[in-house]
Length: 529
Image (cartoon, rainbow, N blue to C red):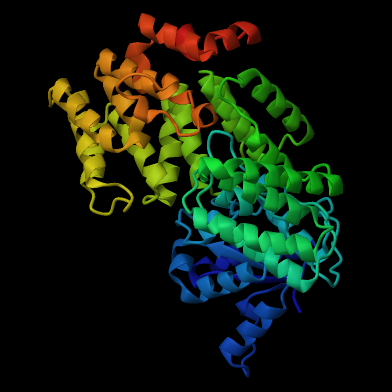
C-alpha cells in the first residue's frame, strides 16, 4: 500500500515524476502508473492502488480535465476525503473540484521549499500520518490510520460565506475520532454546504439539508467541535435568507451550537465565523472592526476573518485598506468565486486597475457562468471605459441563466449611455422601470443614475433604501438595518456624486460621519477629492 496515489494525464508524465521524486525524498511512498506490472489488467491495478492509498494527489492539466480516468480517480478521492490537488498549467478545474483547495504549481521547478509545495506536503502528511510535516530533509515515517483533513466553515457579515468558504477552507488541527456513521453525516452535511457559492448564498434548500445532517452528526459525535461549529455556520448562513419570523430562532440556534463548539475547542474556526457573521455591521462599524481585529489576532491566517474585516473597511469607504487585507488571502490555495469577486471589487474601488484586471481575468476564467462574477464583470467593463467588451458580454448567449432579459435591457441602456451612444435620460428611464419590478437591483440602478449624472433619482432611491421614505421605499430591505449595506456608496460609479451636498447629508444621516470622526479615519473618496 502506497502513501500517495498520483493521478495525472500522460502529457504531464515528466511533471508527475518530478512530484513523485520530491515526495519520496520526504519519506512518502508514491505509486503512479510507471509501476504497472505486465501480467496484471490495467484497470485492476489502478483500482487496487487507488483504493489502498492514504492520499490521492491529482495533477490538474488541460489534458487531465479531459481525461475520464483522472476525473474518476479524483472523484473517488473526494468522496473518501483523500483528495489533494494541484494545478500544473492554466487549466480550468471541472466542477466540483473548482470549489476545493488547489495548490498552484504552474512553473514549479521542483523546489521543495516553495510555499505552494509546502502546502501540498502538509496535506499529504496529515492524510498519511495525521501529523504536520517535519522540516525539509527529515524523513516521515508512514503510519496506519490516516487522519482526515478538517473543513473550516466560514461566513461573511453583509454577505454569506457558504460553500467554497465553508467546505473549501481547511485548517490543520486535531479532533477526536468520530464513528464511521458520525463521519458520514458530517461529510454529507459539509457537502450540502458546498453546493452554494462562497460569499453569495444560492441554494437555501441545501442549508436546510445541511442543518438536518449536521444535527445528526452532533448527536452521534457530541464531543466533535467540528460538527458543532459546522452546525453553527449552517444556522448562521440560513438566517441570512430566512423569512423575518424565523431569523430569531436561527440566530439562537447558531449561537448555541457555537457555544458548544467553543467549549470543546476555543479556536474552532467555524464557531468563530458564525458568531462574527451574526453580529451586525451597519451602524455598528466601530464595534465590528474592533471585534474582527481581535479575532484576527488569534487566527491571523483565517480567510474568513480577513474578508470580514475587509467587508467592514469597504463599508466605511476605506477601499485601499480593504484591498490590502483581501490580498493577504492565500488565493493559490483556494478557489472561491465569491472571494475572487470581492478581491476584484476591492482593487477596482481602490484604483488598482492592473491588479483588478488580473483578478477579474482569474475570476471569469474559473466561473464564467457564475451570476455574481458575471454581474461584477459587466459592471467593471461598463464603468472602466470598456463599452465594446461590455456589449459583447451582454450579447453572449451563454450568460448565466439567472440573468434575465429585463436585466440585459437595462444594463445595455446603461452601457450605451455611459459610452455616449444613447441619451442618458432614456437609459435612466429604462433602469427605473426595471427597479420597479426588481427591488434587489437597487445598487445596479443607483450606480447607473450616479454615473449618468442623474442626482435626483439617485438620492430618491437611496432615501428609500436607507430610510424607507419616498417613492422608492419599496427598495428598503425587509429586515431593515440588519440587511443594509454601504460599500456600494463608495464604488467608482458613484464618483460624480461624492461632491454633492446631498451625499454628505446622506453619509451623515446613516452614521458614517460619526464613524470617521470617532475612529480618526478618512474614507478614500475624501482623500482623493
